[in-house]
Image 1 (cartoon, rainbow over the protein chains, first blue to last red):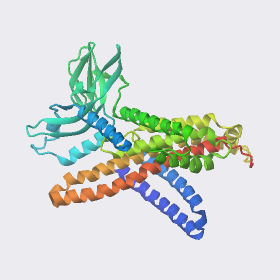
Image 2: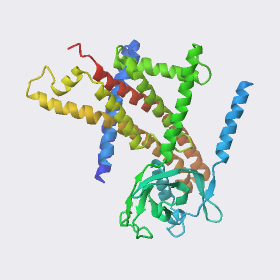
Image 3: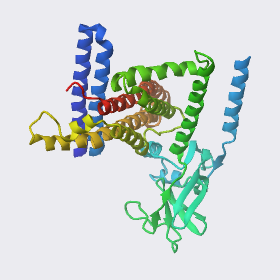
Image 4: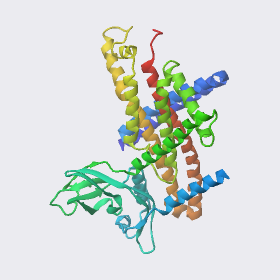
Length: 62
Length: 377
């Protein structure tokens, strides 16, 4: 039961984080379209790190 | 004309492969198992069992199974070799001898030793035992585990994809001896190879060192990507969703960036310059844990969890066909399941590429950190 609540919390946190990353990246791209490639790469790396953390937590909490 | 000949050759090979599969019929007690609730099939439980069974590795390669009118369970697929290191040395036999039994009821006798398969694990029975005795948690009490080197479904997939990659890329490499532009399938592979080299290896590792590591990054990228895609075919591979496989890949990356680390990299990790001396040991612990444990762990868990989660979601959506049959009707449930699983499969195709990209990208990043000359300090 508690690990299900924990899983929910993890997913909420990761969702907020991913939203921030994606949103800020899009703002950046809108401001400087010529830097799209660099912003996308950085965005994917950070998103992957966050995802790794979230999956790690889910995996340990299982 | 040549293309037609080639496709005929290919189709013939496929047909031979399909027909040589032995559809072998065995009466398993699994269907009695799932019909315990007053003769009614407990669909939800069966779906759950099926998904869990798919996520795990198995000893035979089964494409599908069904129960025929006579109530027999029929399996279509082919057996794979079982290779065990038992108490008396090497033992080999085909997995068909277990007759698809997975709860230890079928006992295989080889060289005077008895083996039983329980939940996809093979146990060797004690010499005086005739049947398997299970305790409350379904672990056998009168049998012990053996070292299992079997060619399981995942190992079979690994070998198959490995050979395919060897074929494709050696062909591509040979073409460059005589011509500048590759033909045929090489035209698909070339831009991907260049992409990994120019977009992943070069910017992350740096102009000076990237050539040394491009080979590894290319191998890892195509290996993960092709296996991810193979997992989406009805063959039912789940190779990149096996912890052992992803752990092995992560360890490769760990070994490579640990062994190629420069003096500056280790100095920054163990005795960080520019910070107060008292903080340096604390930082060293954090840095060492990050480099040796957390980085590879996040690599392996990310790939494993993404692919496993994808497989579970696809299979659950396909299972809507059966679980919502009563409330939505046959047409409604099938339509909903088809629609949802179609779109989730499209997303999975994207995820297959993305995970291969991220694994390669992070590997390149870690290697880049290790071989960086730290001249800017």
